[in-house]
Every structure is written in structure tokens, then in C-alpha cells.
Length: 295
Image 1 (cartoon, rainbow, N blue to C red):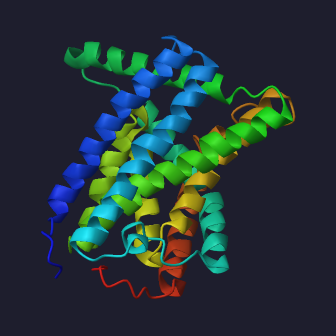
Image 2 (tube, rainbow, N blue to C red):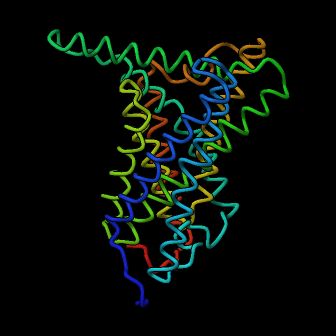
């Protein structure tokens, strides 16, 4: 124990959320002053995405790592879950799981999108669907790359940087802090997955994002580092940018990724079974972590 006051994991979680909210306010004001109030402007959206990931997601976790180093004598690399890098086997399994799970995930996405509220909640459903439509329109506008160079840039922003920022905050920051605090790993993984999904404010994509968040969380638990979840997240987001570009330029059919497995019960079932098999392999083949904060 250090001579400084040690903070509980609950206070550290509060610190992260407060830091995120303050950063969000600062980023929103700064981007608005630079690009105006038109949130549908592509330059505004790109600047907001970059600033959010760097300032709102990464900065609070780096500050927490500095605080933990001072108060608990925890090395910053431990707080950031960057004591080691990903293995080639982990990356290969991430790619295989992503391919295998695609039809099953699309099936869940379609189910979630078609949820209907009871008649007395019709007004709420309409509001949520309007929010979903606005978010989809903004995303489509952001991903509408007109050139190869722009597509590569958007892969870096939407894929790599977003994967980096969100995984450092939600997995290394929130989940890692709970694991350091000896919270049961399954409780921690699913709790953070729910927060991760809720943060996106899209009810009709809520369940698939919980499953994605849980997958990314278990990657952190199984590997003991954040780089593998970052790679998995970047693969998921970057592939959407790439496929959108190919579809917009008539290289492939529209919604190629989104329609694979939809409406096909047997394909979805086979996909789910293959995914479970790969996850079992992943758990058994993942190296045992020496991280003393794991539970």
C-alpha cells in the first residue's frame, strides 16, 4: 500500500464517467465553434468522432492510469491493459469468430429491429424509431466515401480510431477497473456490455450491441490485454466502411454484410453453433494471464 490514499473501484468508475461527461461538453462546444451547428455536416461528424475518441474516451482512462499509479502504485500499463500485445493466434481466432458469427448476428439484428411495442407504447416506439432513422442517416452520410483515399481515411477514423477509443474506455477503463476491484468477471463483462450498448442510444440495435460488447469484454478477460478487443472492434467497424464503399461503387450488392443470414433459421443456427465452438477453442487456447488483478 502506498502512502497516498487509495480509491475504490466505484470511485474510479465515477471518475471515468465524470471525465467523459466533462470532455463531451468541451468537445461539443469546440467542434460547434469550428464547424457550426449543423450536426449533419460530414466535416462536423468526422471532427466530432476524432475528438470524442481522443478526448472523451482515451483521455479519462489515461488520467485514471496516472491516478492509479500515484495512489495504488499500479503501473499505467496495467491500468490500460497494455502490458503485452496480441498473439497471432488470438488475431486469427478473432477473424474466424467474426466470419462465423455474421449470419447469427444478422439474424439477431433483424429480430431486434422488428420488435413491436404494445399499442399503449406506440408513441414511444415511434420516437425511438425516429431516433434510429436519424442515427442511420447520419451514419450512412459519414460512410459515403466517394474515393478510395476517402474510404481509407474513414476506415482509420470509424474503424481503427473508434475501436481504439471505445475499447480503451469501455474495456480497459470500465471493465478493467471492475476486474481490478475483484468484481466477478462475468458480472463485470455483461454490465459493461449493457452500458456500452446503452451509450449508443439505439434501442433497435440494443441486443446485438450487448452481444458485441460481451464478446469484446471476454476478449479482454481471456487475453489479459486490450489490443485484441481493439483489433476485433476495428475489424467490425472497418468492414462496414469497406463494404459500404464497395456497394456504393457497384462492386458488390447493397447491404451485403447486413443481409447474410437474415430470415434463414438454419444458417443462423449453424452460425451460432460454429461461433460457440470457436469460442470454446479460444478460451482453451488463450494464454493464461499473469495479471494479478484478474478474478
